[in-house]
Length: 178
Ligand code: ADP
Image 1 (tube, rainbow, N blue to C red):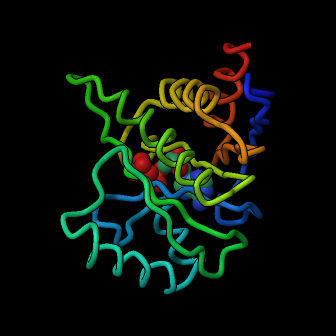
Image 2: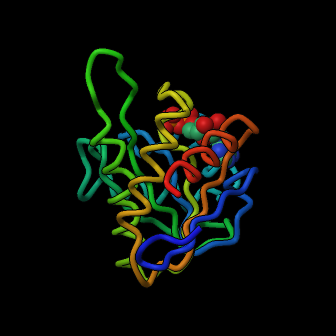
């Protein structure tokens, strides 16, 4: 599917650390020092260079951590990508609407990727794992925001979904958008 700006959105079922793209987006936590899920997989497969770059960022700009909804780039280490863009998703809350923060993750990651000159960007389903965001809503926000925000030089945004359920929810979100 194509966005109004002519960016192609694709869905892939698989492991985001296996993608060959310019940017792999990491569902990081604010410490930037690694964690479980996508974060753990990226640091495992990408090697120590990524963590070293994250530590440097902490020592310089992000002593208090990276705020929720923001994004920052590092080397991709041994991954088959040029950069990892780390973004911090909001933890799901049933009492507070944090959708704007989740949308901000996609928008800020895309902005960072475009500034770097990336043409291909792979996203996981941010916040839908350890952070507990319902997959249908997470998919809706992801697709809606990428449709609005992806611009040149980005040509392809690839959502990499770990399981059949996530894939089906992203497919439904894409179809709902026509
Ligand atoms: P968060 O803390 O933002 O919720 P997680 O990494 O826990 O981030 O999960 C985000 C989503 O990514 C979940 O849907 C999870 O199933 C999925 N996921 C976990 N590992 C991978 C991987 N290697 N590749 C792609 N998706 C993954």
